[in-house]
Structure formats: structure tokens, C-alpha cells
Image 1 (cartoon, rainbow, N blue to C red):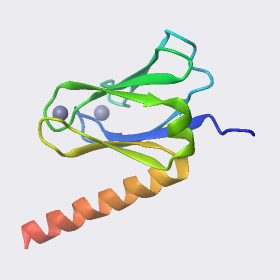
Image 2: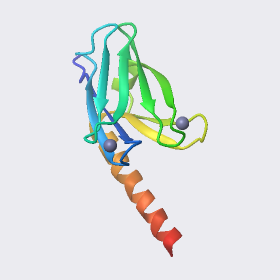
Image 3: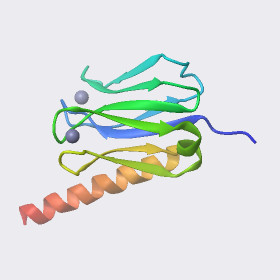
Image 4: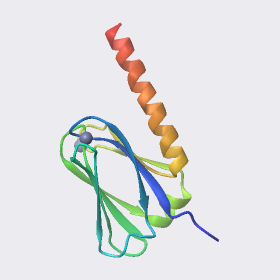
Length: 124
Ligand SMILES: [Zn+2]
Ligand SMILES: [Zn+2]
């Protein structure tokens, strides 16, 4: 069985607030190496580190509380499941989506819409 080893991560830049969708190739992530993704503004978005062949860690700069949070994933699980919603342990806000590329994109767009609608409601 052939797996698509690319996943996407969607999150907001803590510096400029831009919504970013980045692709991560788990296949290219060699053991022990760290992959860093930066925003166009130069701010670091997240880091991915593979600890063993089956798991990897994602360090996300949190838009909600300005700290870095660690999430540990099972590669196979992430690739076979749909989307994982990562929330901030301090504020409970959803800060990122990780998983299937198409679904992450859909989630990000929907989330974006929800936020815009919320802002509209708030602004009356
Ligand atoms: Zn930025
Ligand atoms: Zn947080």
C-alpha cells in the first residue's frame, strides 16, 4: 500500500497574523533532523523533529499565548487520519490544523470564514 507522505500544517503567524499553509514531507524528514518553517515576514512558524521512524514532534509558536507548544504525532496515524486540530493548552483556542493536505486547506478556509463572520457580528 502506497502512502502519501506529505501532510499540511495550517497556522497563523504570531508576528504578522498571516494564515499560512505549509507542506511537510514526512518521508524527507530524516531521523533526528529538525525542519524549520518560516513565514514570509521572517518569523518562525513551527519546527518539526522526527524522534523515531514512527513518531514526530511539532513545535508550534502559539498565536494565543505566545509560547511554543509541543505536539507529538504518530506518522502513520496522521497520514491515515483526516485532520488533527491542535489547541493551545493554556487558552483552549485552536491554533493549528495538521493532516491531509486537501482537508487542512478546507479547514483553514472554513476557520477563516468563521473568524470573519465572528468579527462581522462583533462589529455589528
Ligand atoms: Zn509572518
Ligand atoms: Zn498557547
